[in-house]
Amino acid sequence: MTARILSGKEFAQRIREDAKRQAEALMRRTGVRPGLAVVIVGHDPASEVYVRNKHRACEELGLYSAAVELPAETTKEELLAKIDALNADDRVHGILIQLPLPGSLTAAEPEVLNRIAPEKDVDGFHPVNVGRLSIGEPSLAPCTPAGCLRMLELADIPIDGARAVILGRSNIVGKPMMALLLAKNATVTVCHSHTKDIAAIAREADILVAAVGRPNFVTADMVKPGATVIDVGINRVAPKKLVGDVDFEAVKEVAGAITPVPGGVGLLTIAMLMQNTVAAAQRQIEK
Image (cartoon, rainbow, N blue to C red; front, side, top):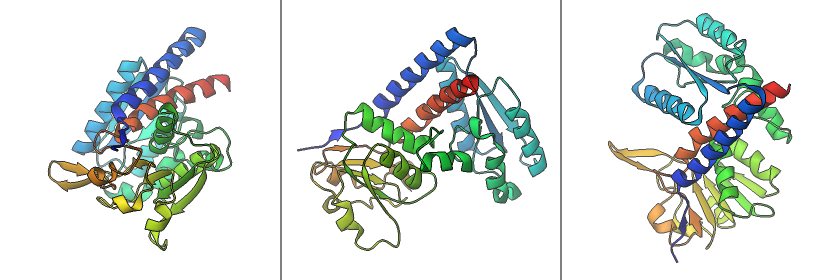
């Protein structure tokens, strides 16, 4: 039996609708319009597309949106000063730095990200938010794993008591995905490049999350029949062809549910960014 296809478009739309309702309720109650500032340094075409997409998403939800465009020769001190100004701006409840930063700023990325006030860190990368997530306190979680979890909930896929296996231990996906699933009472195993017999471990999963950055890494014989497979990978294998970390055509004949690439998890990331911006505004007002 062919797996249920978990459409990123469908679930992203539901997440956006929830965020819009929450934003409208907040504005009616307090008069405050949630706001997001995106900082881009230099002129990377791919980054500029992402920034436009985020601005468009804010407009659709009625959020305040500010695009801060800085020249490629911007110094670290100038960038940090701009972040300080956004931290102090009451119109801005979420701050996002578009990565990668150009030139010599690349080495300063950790310092730059840590300069964002934790309550405005809608990417969920600040050590304070990472710590809160790891101990189960309310926090702003990284958008991609948070989107994966929300999709599982909206799709009515059982998490409580499920065996979850995550392939990949990155700070952006693997580790926060582990914390989010643990908080929902899943039993979680994280595999990485030093894990022995990954295939055998993967076959035990009720929920299998692939985030290794290797095209078609997960094959059908690595998947338990009926499992839910979430493919976070985006790999360019030809100028106009993207594939995930999962061999989609083969695995969909084994899995119970699966996300496609493209058209899957990637669409959830901006939706969760909107959700995080609204949540950040609510918390800042309450505080």
